[in-house]
Length: 322
Image (cartoon, rainbow, N blue to C red; front, side, top):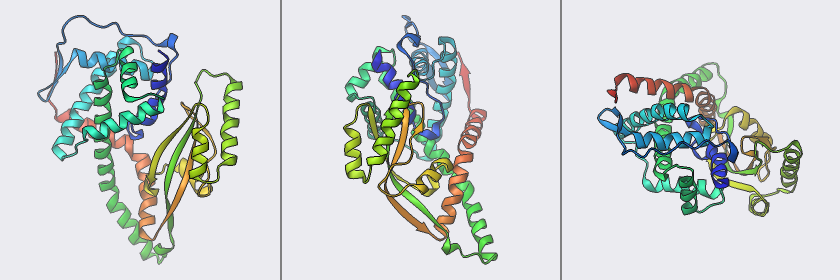
């Protein structure tokens, strides 16, 4: 069961931040297992001629219990509605030609397993012991990856005209757009794991350990190697983060932190998190202006756009409850 708790604590970073749900870590005593149903699986809902079965709902409900600490009844209800949304989103992705390969899904699973200190087979076994089929987890990841691409594309289309208009206004006011600069970043996320039930003494100790690493961190090559040697510390390769993709809160910390150093530790559901800035890449001129606009727009519009598009899909869909 401890492996199941570890998985739950690591899910938030793995399921694509744009897709929406606060993840709560569970204690073994608090995890309510849904009793398996012995009857054969039957069709529960039909979404544009695609079926959702009782087995689909049961597997997803177990996953939601694990991730969100829902009661069995609430988890089952949320699972059914989530699966309907996913069917619609995947159908929309197919119409748009947005497809996520099996290799990409497996790569995401492998990354999650690694952060949970397990191999992929161990991860699958641990999920199974909590009543969650690996297919349930894979289906959720695939749907979120597809939908994330659709939402980002929609937002970028909406703000493209706005960016061009504001740049033109800047030129009309004779402000020099070429003087505007912004930074893209090559990042690694460093997480000092802390259970949500940890005592204040443990929390303070882990924060002190994170600060100690930050004080010694002078480059990604040496600093990340040191981090990997520490107990209960996970390193996640974020890769290149465009100026347009950095949320305002993190943006401030990155701008104040020198290349090759760590941002200050911030408390999260997982513990204390810092970002190693392995490279700062300056962009200038109109690209920097557009990047600043995109950062604000993406941060404010992501959830709103997702809800709006999903509502439109539901309004056009043929959904039959059995």
